[in-house]
Length: 337
Image 1 (tube, rainbow, N blue to C red):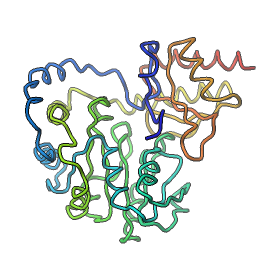
Image 2: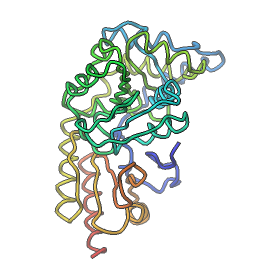
Image 3: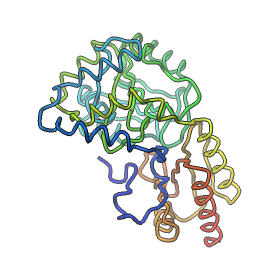
């Protein structure tokens, strides 16, 4: 695993007041969830289901697909590593820049990697990795273009990571479409949907035969009892966890416009986070300065393939928090001149 692959709030010992480094909207009240988990505490005295069959059935029912077409995992990252294990010794192509775990998982399992920059330049490979909307850019690829590419390459596995689907107002590939394709594994994240990164819970959808190959590689009890119980409770209370994707996207665009106004380049985004490029100095310097001077945390994006030490990423939070970030970045540019 790459150090600093995302939210590294744990490094700062309470010195951060506003966290823009994670692509999750952080203002979520989990008091009801925590009360429920406290009431279910006795579950830790027994093993959970070897595989989370009950939760998989509930997700499948809501999506209108079969229970064998859903595989719940210890975060979507577990599914990433299981796919790489299944494709060991073969050839992968990764749409970059993107989530670093795809290449880390491939290298761990001796999968050769080629990077490509857009759908038109997609090379031949045994497995194609696409994050949609993409992390760190926030850009969405037309789902029809992905499904068409998959239909043209039936012997190629397409892994489509839609972890940030709930922060997007544009359509993406549905679970039914992934199942019907036969060569698509769709990754989803309850971590992102409900702002619960500490619980590590996600799931993959795809044809039953494809997921059976992944299940054969997983460890038993990879998803713990409290994570399963939390996921079941959250899915039943989904309405209590609204995500105002249009408002968050508008805030991301407002941040981008403000940064462009002081000479910081921002890339196109379709969701709640954006990628930016400093004109000089490094993102690591900016990150430490923001923590020390303003108690703000951003994501140094220099370890994304194809990016530079001057790239950083921020995720929109509340308008008030975003204004604090904008003013701090304006101060940084003034001091850097």
